[in-house]
Length: 297
Image 1 (tube, rainbow, N blue to C red):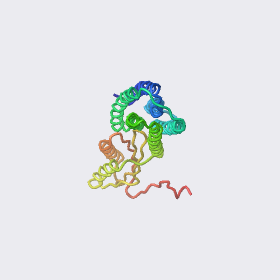
Image 2: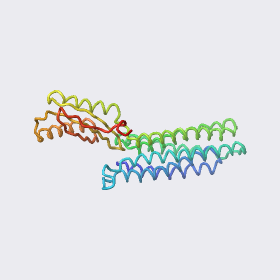
Image 3: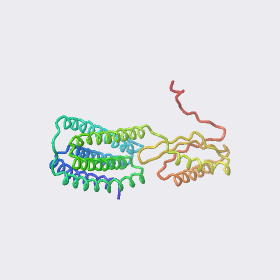
Image 4: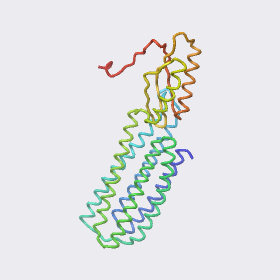
């Protein structure tokens, strides 16, 4: 199943869980269940936006975006983080109001049952989405999956707290639990925004991928009397890119040099799936000028 199919399933699941949690809140009057329902509403908005961004990221390069639209997925993660933070603020406000004006709860057992059902749906979907997101390196899928996992923990905490209210009769546990829920989702929202910012800043490849890149280059150095330098990499959504200079004897023909470059590119792409390599050919005794920070001052 493709990434957009998972996100469509996430939208459908969010609609179902919103209905279940809203019903649970309506019947019980629990502010913690209201907080849980609000987070599911954020799930729905986030899933819809993520679906739009994944669709955009899949578009082929065009004249205005010759390198593609892969970074669109990072906007999804950042947007969902903002939504989560907004939801946390709303939950804080609701919990404070309920703490000032406590109310007894009703039909708590029914509310707990609906929360457990919605949590099971979210947990199954989150596990599948997180596995697929890591497989295809999709920030949108991983962001939505982590949000769903947060929702599962939220529901588990709410259920535990409501059981505590039933057992003790301490109604102040309900707004206290809502505050704990808000703190938890606030942490997740900040994490998603941080991850989104990292992606938009063109971070280098992870250490394992870079190690595989250098292992490939080391394999070509000895037998061909060539060397590599100015190796730089970046990540953009599901795509990974690397640029480098490949130095070889000036006596080589262009055809021989190009053939060897093709071998290096194929080896790099086999070692790091999804990698796009750009290799500049240079004679051994020639150094190419590159612009760095000193050139910009």
